[in-house]
Image (cartoon, rainbow, N blue to C red; front, side, top):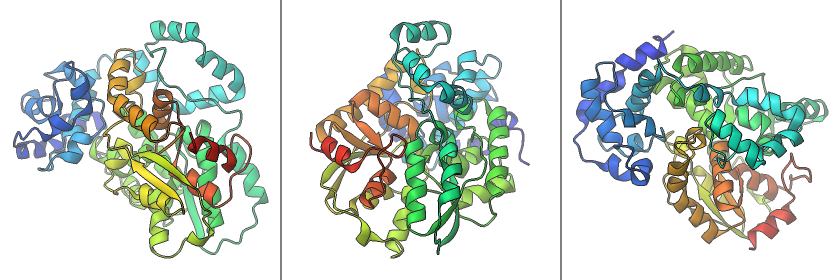
Length: 431
C-alpha cells in the first residue's frame, strides 16, 4: 500500500521535478485555460514557481481554475510534473472546504443507476431550461452545460443477454473489457461496438463486475475517495484473469489506471501497477493488431467520408501517439482530419461548473469551429465527456473511433444501443 493520498499530495515526489523548471514558459503558451481567462495565472506560476513556497499549503487560489488537462506536463521539455503537482496542490487547498457540488458531480455511476429506470423522464428534465436553472442555483451546475442522455438499458444489461447467445469460435482466447461508468450507462453504443468488434476478430470478451475508477473524484481533489474506488476496481478487473489484456474504450478512465492514480495520488499498490501495465485503449490495441497482420483489414467495407478527429487531453497524456487516426484511415475511403486543438474544454467535470462554464466554452470554441468546417455532422473522439462537449458545441454526432470500425465491418445494428445504421451515418457525412 502507498501513502495516504492526501498526505502524499503534501510531500509528493513530483516536487522533486520542480527544480528542473527553466522558466521557458512553453507550458504557459500551450495552456488552453490561460489563453481563455485572466482568472488563471498559468501553469508555471501556480505550479513549479508557487510550489517552492507552499510547504504543504496553497499560495495562489487561481489554481482552482486549472482544468487538470495535463497539457503542461505533456509539452514540458524538462520533464517537470506540472499538472501532477498542481492537482496535488488543489486537493490540499480544497480539503477543508470541499463544495457539495464537487462531491455530487463525481458520482457518475450513481447517476447512471438512478437515471436508467426513468430514462425518458430524466432526459426530459435535463432538457428543461427552468429545471436546469434551478439546478444551477441550488447545486452550481451551469444550466447550459453538456449532459449525457440516459439510456433505458445498460451495457451490462445488454451483455448478460448477449453472453448467453454468443457461439464463437474465439481462436484468440479471452480478453477483459473495462467499460467505465459512462460506457456502462450513457455511451452504451460505444461499449457494445467494442465488444462486437473484439468478438468478430476472435476474442472471447470477459466483462467482470466493475465500479468507478475514481477519476472524477481525483480531478476534484477527493483523493481518499478516489483511492478507495480505484483500489476496488483493480481487484474487480484482476478477478477476470491476472495475465489477460484489458481493453477500454473509455480513454480517460484507462488513463486513470495507467497514469493518474499513481502519478497524481501516489498509489503504488502492486495491484494498480499490474492492472495499469495490462490496460490498453481500444484504438491503440486494434492498430497494433493491424500492424501485426492480425486484423481482417480485407473485411473493412468502403466508407467515403472525411471525419474530424480530436484526441482528448487524458489520452494524449498516456504517450501512445494518435493510433485512432491510422486505425480509422485503414478503412477504404476514410480521411481523418486531426483537430490541431489542445483541448475541448470540458476536462471531465470542470466545464459543468457554473463559474467555469464560460471558460470551458472559450477553450472549446476553436475545436467546435473546426468540426463545423470539416464535417458538421460527424466527428470522432475517444472519451465520453469530451464527446458530450463537442456534440453540444458543434451540433455534430460524435462517435468513438471503434464505432467507425464497427460500421465498416458490417456489424452495426439498427437500434439506439447498437449505433446508427451505416446509411444514416453516410447521410450525416455528406452535409
